[in-house]
Image (cartoon, rainbow, N blue to C red):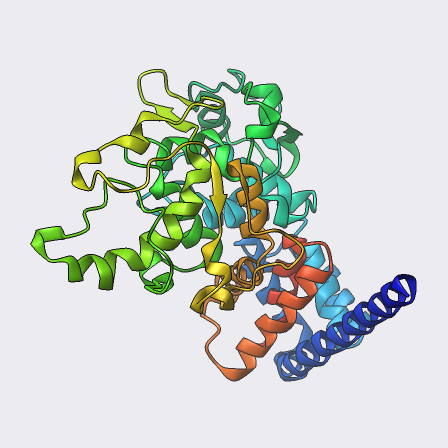
Length: 401
């Protein structure tokens, strides 16, 4: 009976994939039929400029025009977009400016190139599944850049930027455990890069890492995620239950974020960024002192014993974030939390939305744009989470506007 059920489920999943692909083709074809009015030369130029950030060289422009004219509708525009994503400036300019704001609290593009940005760019170039971005033992370094990468400074990446290294060819995939000495089990993709640790694990309570992960990878900030229906038993001692002497503030405001956030931030209990040594600390089986600060604010609050976490947003209003049924919704450490976050529907939607906005120069607010983003998201999740393909599809969809 179970074999027959598995076969039926597999058949059903295959049918859904075919339907999703057909829907994607139909939506993009609708976009392409409109954009065809622009003419193949204008389409090719627009695709290249939006992906590569510069005008196309004449030979490349002609190659893209030939690709558009040589295949009908969707296929031709996607072939042209694939040519554009091979341009060095796609990696050195477009992707670099796309990701640098994720790496700092000010969310500014005017921040130094770093290991976080290098890793995202390398993942896009190499078609590494992007749903591993918050959990993999992965790090991209720069071939030929001196000094060597170090857990204690950003000099390796700063030197590469200063010397104008071509990121389309120079990036090299390695691991955080090999370069930084972080235990493999403690690595969590972008979360445990040095740049992320320096920005979001420094000082404070480690809640910043969770908040900026939501901003960068869920396209939302904590006020949007507020849910006052979750239990408050795992909110730490540092959160006053009667701020200003009024418990209503806690019950109607503070609890909305902390009841869901604090149980998940517990995954980071063994992490800190030491400003003196300039590197991330990981203290296995030892909770960082920052988790016990301001205990007098509410002595009866939760005292963190370890790095176990629980996702209480799997119930209540935040079920709309689309949590995966294949994961348990709880675990220990940053790696398993990263897998939980990156397996959600909202994680995938966020990546596609950001790319669409970067390439099309507008937020997807119209009915057509929202349908296009939805279709591309379906292809993104079913097609191996290849972010480079999302750039190509977005640029092709916006070729006429």
